[in-house]
Image (tube, rainbow, N blue to C red; front, top):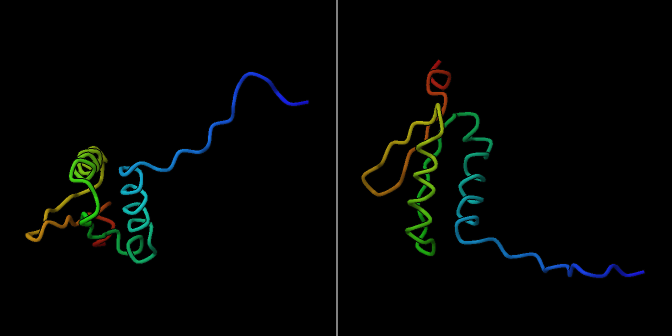
Length: 86
C-alpha cells in the first residue's frame, strides 16, 4: 500500500558553497596534506567570491588552524603546526 501525504522530494543538487567546501575538504584530506599537515588552497575562477569569503570566515574559527595569505591570492593552511615541525 502506498503511503499518502508526504511526497518524496527529489534530492537537491549541492549549492555552490557546498561544492566549494567539498573541493577544499578533498584537498585537506589528501594523503600528502595530512602527512605534512599543510595545504595551499585557492578560489577557482568559476567559484563565487561570496562563497570563498564565507569559507575563509568559517576556517578562521577553527582552532589549531593557521591561515597564511599568499601574494597571489592563495591561502596556505597549516594545522597543529607544532606537531608538523617536530
